[in-house]
Length: 252
Image (cartoon, rainbow, N blue to C red; front, top):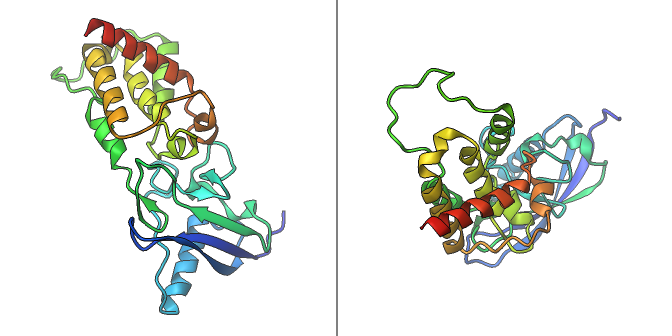
């Protein structure tokens, strides 16, 4: 693979505020090293825009290590880009050809209103999480590590579900703007463990109800959510969420 710097053309969605009309604006970034990260490339663009007295492109970012999930955006029509199991900040410019045109858009979903440019409001996820995506029981000090025997398969499944970083790519990719993968991961990570039992009924009911209240669509098993998830969360969690919700509804 060539280590020569590249010229990258960008078509970026610019929108001054949520209620304003947006449009695509063309930019060019020159001398882009192949090992530069995607967000670093946008930093270079913004530095150039500021020098010219123009307004910088707004985008979310924080850890830049694939942990926090705030960097999500649509790259050439795919949430986080075309590489599986990768967040936007982990994308490297070696993935693009010299002279290539890259289209950038914010996540498109009604429950994720645009704030500005590539930034969307994902507070809906926080409100769903606040309805039970945690263990709130007062259990005192930490128990001995062997106090609760957890089968390895259950522990592995719980850890896999807990890998969800809440980036919202699943919603952006789903034709129904469903948040089922996110919500199911938050429900599943506790349903596999004995520590989650005391609140499992309340958790399933309240989190699913809040998901519906936020305006997210229903899951129709298209599978796009799993395909774009940077942490490769399995859609099997959605089936588990449905079972948990049904059992909770019957008990209620």
